[in-house]
Length: 419
Image 1 (cartoon, rainbow, N blue to C red):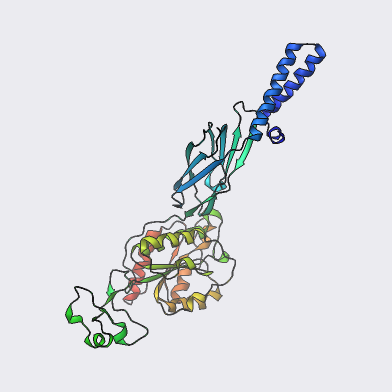
Image 2: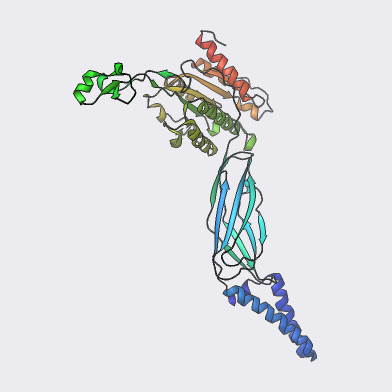
């Protein structure tokens, strides 16, 4: 009863107050009919409080989000299914979902009573223009009696994440840095350890040409072995994103960092679709979820976009160099850079030696706070003096055009022409 009385709604409190007032007035005025009305109002409020306070609803919730990985500006569908696992019928239910502000206003639904063993479903949409990882839920259920006199709240603890990835732009299929062509070419693979006989032969498979049988190894192992010919080689690509606080200007969705993240995402997806094994490196170092791997392009795209969805401004003044220690794997290197300082030049030189003919899109970050006016200096010029192929980018520039220009500059340098 105590819990039921504490859950009285405004209507329930009004009924109780009106009933008590009617009984008191009836006693003062000697009006028996008025007292009967007062007793009825009080009894109705107390009965509703007793019934709702003693009720023990057993509700189960199943929440699904599709898709859970969605590009900024695109909607996701959230499906809620509520099941009454108890023995009694519930009253009217008011559902309210907890959402971060960036996903929109909190959805509210009114559902009629559920009989035991029955379920009810509702669906709503969420959409965000801001990348990141957000939690949907928990769901709050408020139960009312049929007269709306008492309302009791129940809250589920379950939540479901949704990841909003940066916007990506389709890039033209321009020729890529000479040697790096993706997984379409077959190239001889160099083996680091073991003798030639051990690492260039394999077991015989039905249908292999008998002219490829390596008789010396077959005699030594007792099994028929054949020479291993050229193996498919999957080119590697490193996408480097400078996300330092000092390298960017502006705030929110209109900042240079958001433009850089969108560019890096577009380039990473494009290279993955071209057959490259792509990893992401930021000013804080190599992202562990996108480190060198053997995943297919279809599977690799999601980890790249998830990692870029969580990129934030780094307060470190310098660039991490731990990922440059591993020189066993060379790769195509594409950078999306902001403003550079004099202490970055040595790291930029090391990065050039780590990659093969590195390319970069250098954001003219001052243009993000000066209304698009080009700054006097040129970050692309600095990078060119350090051995990179680079183009400057301003807010008005479009990534497909920059990508084509970067390809032309790389092709020009390959043939000895500087532009």
